[in-house]
Amino acid sequence: MPHCNTRKGSKNSKRTTRRCKNVKRSGKSLRKSLRKSLRKSSRKNKHGKKTIRGGANGDDYLTTLTTLGVPSGDISPIMLTVVSNLNIFDLLNWCQTNTDAANICRSPRFWRELSRKQGLSGVKDRESYLNAVPQLYKGAEKDIVKAFVKKSESLDLSNRDLNTLPESIGNLTLLQDLRLNNNRLTRLSTSIGNLSRLRNLELDDNRLTTLPKSIGKLSELMSFNLENNRLKILPDTIGNLTQLSFLNLKGNRLESLPKSVKNLTNLLRFGMLILDNNPLDPMKPKLV
Image (cartoon, rainbow, N blue to C red):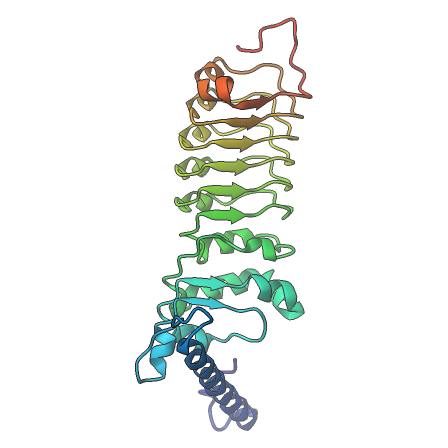
């Protein structure tokens, strides 16, 4: 968007002024059309219930809007600042079906700017739709974590060619489901231990050689997939994951297991522990 305070004497002042007017005009048009569509949808849906409530003022239809899906078309900063009570902002189809949008969604700058919009400050997105993005530019994951997924309960960052995870991943304390499979991760941030509500953690098909001791803080974890990594040892704190009912260690380089595994009674008695394709010596104790 051009700067609209260009000096009159500047070389391109007339051209800039025209562009500014066009932008403002398009913003008003977008706001008008959105308001019109909201009035229509607020009448009654097929179940006979009103979908959106608002007062006499047209702006009320926008300020009371709590869910916004963007299947196609354009979105603008003007629109985002109007929808001040937005709780769910779904960009899934927009990122998937629009070629230009797909390129934008891969940009770190897009997520930085999106997180700064006043209209999105209260978004409580239950599930992050990052699986809509075909590929992340290097470093983009840091900006995404800083964006509006802080209150998400599910985050899918699988198939991203990620080498590392930012420390800020530990700020997503409401996460219950975290999928990081099919990446190039060689280590995990110790801050992952802050995700105390996590129930499902998928790390299969990475390049992990060790796990941080903080992994033992995931006291609610029920399913843990570590298949096809390069793990040689497991931390003793693995024994703190007493809620585990599924642990997949297939295809690693484990020669032994820590004694603390005996504490995983729920897993050993009623769950599933997979140890196939590891160099565990059958002549030696597996628990050390």
